[in-house]
Image (cartoon, rainbow, N blue to C red):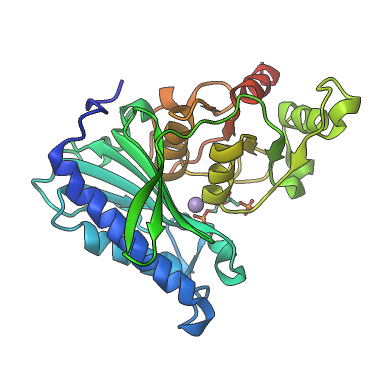
Length: 313
Ligand code: AHG
Ligand code: MN
Ligand code: MN
């Protein structure tokens, strides 16, 4: 259940969406200048999670934080900041973001993005985000690729908008995205094969066996290294994505963060007819216990995700 009627977007959400769009358009220009400007991929420090921060990670976070002030965002949570910030004590919304996803692709001109998730704000900053993922009122990503795209859901389907570089405005490109139920492609970081748990190993073996195995048809393999790019591909033409838990230290719950990566992508995918699970439970039924916690993440074409869940027993 979403807390707002998704067919009637509350007026006071528009300033938030406008700020996200304006900042996304601005960031896409910064990214398009790439090597002509100051280095965007230079290391500048570490975030609270111990991830290396690149210049663009920090720049994007600062741009969204500044743009969202005065728009009705009460609580702002970011991958790049340890604690939730209060931007507007009277604001109605709590917004969590991965301001720059796919930072390993900044310096190689490959698609990167911004992910966001919006909840109604409660008085307690952390509690605003530590609640069932099904209570998100909106979720989306901006993909900075050959085209700058915005995928957005309010809980009544997933829409796609494209930035018109001439006007700086996002225009509707597709009213309802639909993930095909069968997948032709799978996506996982195969360099971690030796650390995989048995169900993941088994699924990948089935995919690799193709028409010579139980699946009876061939699968293609893709790995970009930007969750936004993988999600966009899967929303467009189906497929599966897995970032499972594995045997490495610190990967007990995979790599991706529940609040600002996994939950919003799960909402976008399910609203487009796909499925999203942590292997055993639908992501949207889960509640984060910590702001930066990780979750195993499997999503994509419904039939394939059901198969992966079945292998998890
Ligand atoms: P971020 O750049 O925000 O830290 O996210 C990177 C994420 C995600 O985009 C991608 O799917 C995954 O990490 C890549 O993981 P590997 O380093 O295992 O390739
Ligand atoms: Mn990310
Ligand atoms: Mn990031």
